[in-house]
Length: 349
Length: 78
Image 1 (cartoon, each protein chain N blue to C red):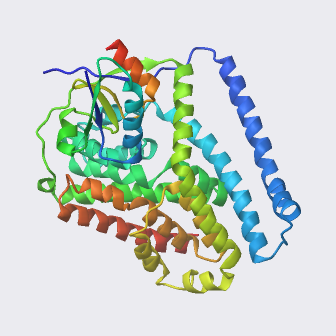
Image 2: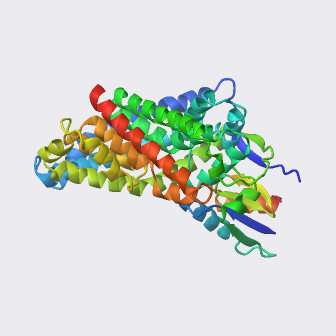
Image 3: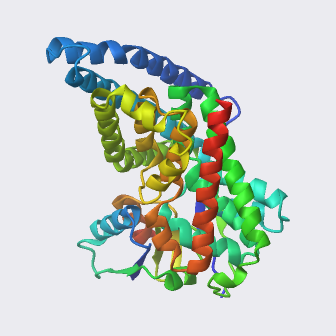
């Protein structure tokens, strides 16, 4: 039975979108203004309004909390909105079509790259995974996508750039994609296709309809609000933990145990991170605080990736269609990669 | 008419379900809402992303959460 399904995808922009340029310019101006005002306002709130003393634990923690919360929400709103707009062109169906018939190697790299730009809800992991596999996309290529999608989160990418600079952001992107490509290739080589439940279905073609820009923008804005609502609590908790670390953990403690000179810091950090899971956006403030306290940047990134890239909820869901042996191999490859990158970055940065 | 909400149970899926329930409230004849959570059942609909919404077995939207207005419009336009 042929089934036609209509899904909505982005339409190209009109020929001369002057109104759009104007809006974008206004948006950028507003963003810069608010951004510049953040620290002064946070200072005023903490030291004048709340009468806290600078340089004390509570004063520093509160100041950090206020400043960081406002800054992160500003960044998040802007980034999520912009990225959602851009991303509307990358429906899973298009990705699937782009990847089918690709050989390993090229396919892995494409899958990793596409994984970075496509949204990923962990409950989508299963249908997406099966859909790809049933379409004839090689298992390894599918895994490249599955690894890079949650691991390299464009929100985290932009936030890391904003907080740590282009070098760190580029390393995160590079490491994420490399892990995805290598991991996918490795799994492909192991020929573990028998570890996946087969459904023997054929995916029909889904008809895609173009949406006008105004509706796209509204949808993007709705999605932004929804994502903020979902991610917000994680971020606030992340900032709270970051603020606590910032204000209360003595610099020596972290630097001594996880600074550059401790060779065990990286594996220990990654192992601690395994059972933990946080949304990427929520992890950035924690990463920032740890780094400010003396944790080596490589260790911070390894910890970050391990928390974000390996999530228990995702594994619980994938368990429905992937047998334990493959799941363990999958987790193992990721763990080893993160540890390796941790060491590499510590040496390079 | 029957509305099927496809999803493994994450927050987005629950949101879609809530919106669907809001959309069908008070409709006559009453519209039934069915939750499809098992992966085998979900794959029968051939979707690539959840949460997804289907009406009488035909997928209308996948990978995003529709608000109750959109769902109601879908039901009325058939």
